[in-house]
Length: 154
Image 1 (cartoon, one colour):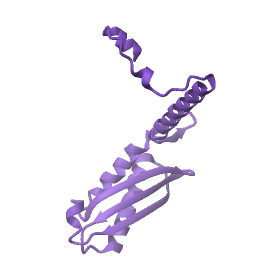
Image 2 (image 1 turned 90 degrees about the vertical axis):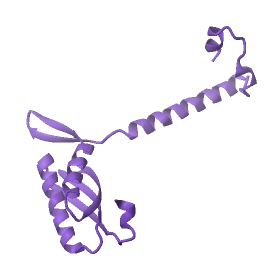
Image 3 (image 1 turned 180 degrees about the vertical axis):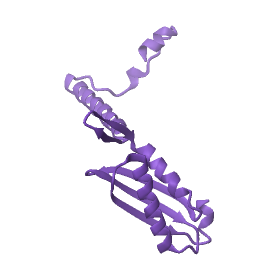
Image 4 (image 1 turned 180 degrees about the horizontal axis):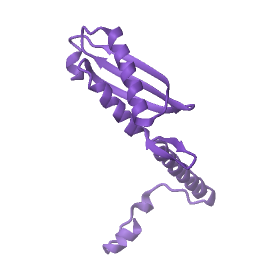
């Protein structure tokens, strides 16, 4: 801040009015606190990074995919069904295969058992086509909407 004030030929600086400690121990405590805040922010930034999925194609190497791309493929495949209103997909590595958690909102008065079977088959086919890996676990949460709730999901 002081450099900015000097650059515009101003002698005002708000640093004098900040209640900063003047003892070496107090200044060290403020420095440690600032360092801890910066490390926490850095950890949050790195944690939010997209999860990667490495697929071994041969002894020569692997293909690395972002899980967001695979989730988009599965979401598009499930969302293409005419009874599906909204889809949310989460894919993660699970052993030698993939685990998928799929949340689906369906139109009112749909046969839930038949739709569940179709969606599970679609999810498995889309994951195998996109990655070539087996589906280790697929958890489907199907919500059949009521007529008055349909407006919120469209």
